Amino acid sequence: MSELRWNPLMGEWLATATQRQDRTFLPPANFCPLCPTAPGGFPTEIPEATYDIVVFENRFPSLSPNPPAAAIEASELYPVRPAQGECEVIVYTPNHNSTLANEPVEQIYKLVQVWTDRFRELSQIEFIKYVFIFENKGEAIGVTLHHPHGQIYAYPFVPPRVARELQQSRLHQEKTGNCLLCDILTEEKNDGRRIVTENESFVAYIPFFARYPYELHIAAKRHLQDLTQFSEAEQLNLALILKQTLVAFDKLFNVSFPYMMVLHQQPSDGNNYDYYHFHLEFYPPMRTATKLKYLAGSESGAGMFINDTLAEEKAAELRGHIEPIVRQI
Amino acid sequence: MQDKKTKPEKTLVGKMQKRREKMADEKRYIIYYTFEKNEKIPVKIPESETKKDV
Image (cartoon, rainbow over all chains, first blue to last red):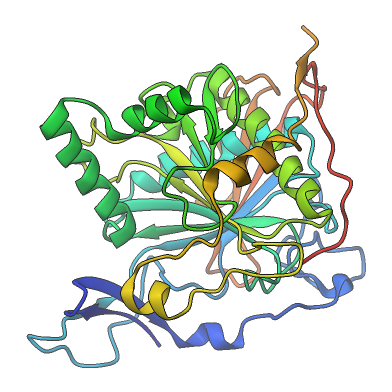
């Protein structure tokens, strides 16, 4: 059963996807469905081993291109629609035991190119209005497969958190004539205390308004709306700053650091979003080496996050683990 | 859509090629991405040495 149900209290859609209850859950490494099928081994999702990166349709999707009709009747108060969209899995490497932080920068650069290709292709589908690229990493986040991978949800609407960012960006531009994220970058750079690292094309920082102790944002210095507008140098610089920050994350507590990583790009609904600005956001759940940040009453019930730390101090801590990248050309 | 090969695009890691096939269930698609070059990009980068998962 899969359908979209309207929440009139919040003015937003949610998906039901009951088939996901039966999805593969933390299988042993020799039964990983994201590893290439071994000769004589059990058939995985990926029959071939000769690839750099693989993308395939999720076996347990929340959204699908040809969804069944909604199983429950709609009403005026409760609109219902088929859960139409795309859910893809991006397998970063054939190596089961790797992580994005452990991959060489060449592989991360290839991933940026695959992200770009997926964004471009999925954006052209008529019923797709927003292409959302993300990674859930670590059991603390709730991953069900350890093999390094990310996901793409291509929604038939602009999801609410992005819609709110778009609205705030539009209002800021109407009020000041400026891009909101460009102004945030200027403010962060002028202050400097929350900057973690930067290169010619990107700035990584823990924002003034961070909700999680190690919430890191990476924003393009150039005012760009999506990956397809990046130059080759910007693609490489995104890979470099990702490598640098992911390694710093792992060094914080000497563990493979869990996180949610999300890419915020402009919608694919044909409207003009020149006022919007591409960026990535990381939401790591760890607040110390042994404690997690939980979304409890205030966060879940009221929508107000309480951050037990100061962004300025956490940025300094993370900055201490940043190692310089030396260009050898 | 099956066995569709696209025109390669030139990049710093060589030309990206993608091959799209149907999966074993004959319903879903899978896309294999390959790149021409596996040369090191000439930068010295930090390495992650952690293994312990959380």
